[in-house]
Length: 261
Image (tube, rainbow, N blue to C red; front, top):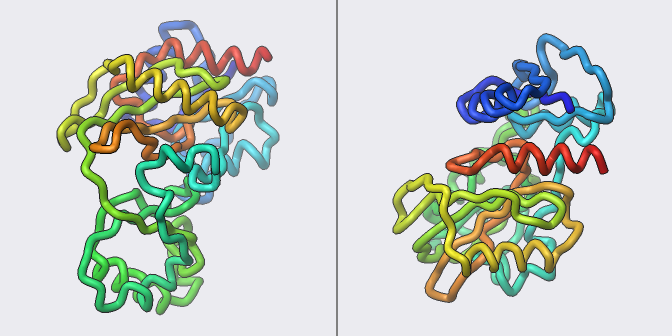
């Protein structure tokens, strides 16, 4: 398999492991948001190429017929089988971002905000209603041509939900409905990259992957421990997710196994 990697810190970790394993690694730069690669890489076999880096790389993979390329995913919020297990989602308010200025005006509270799709327009975060409303008004007031490519727009679907108390957070790398590696990335609200996961969290993640079998050939799932137990935070594209303290060789072998299938 040929690996096309955008050059930044996390993919350097992946590139080092791939090189040690004797794999074909090509480094590239990406035109921001557009997804074009410069210089254009020399592709040997279109059906044996995978890309890691910015989410916008999917556009290059699709337009050039590269497979497996980039593993795209459907919004996790639309997966009804996961609804009982979501941290934010069962009672989320979903609306175009442009409506937030009116619907949140005068409200005095905190909201967790994120795009419904895994589009990277803005990272999920807790914000005051006033700040969200103000940002919505600014975005809605700008002409479409003045908005940067890949930024929030008035028609971007977003979800607003109640902020939750979280004690531990883990990222799971799932390939063919099976967890192939994992990493803790937060504990007690503090960043803590450790290749460790307790059995109950691992089993919960594996159960969630099996519950929605076939969701995507490869993706990452972030889970957490709360007062209500273990919950799904979100899913993300495996091609553009940070590696934290994950073991990369099992991930590489699992993805190469997909190509062989």
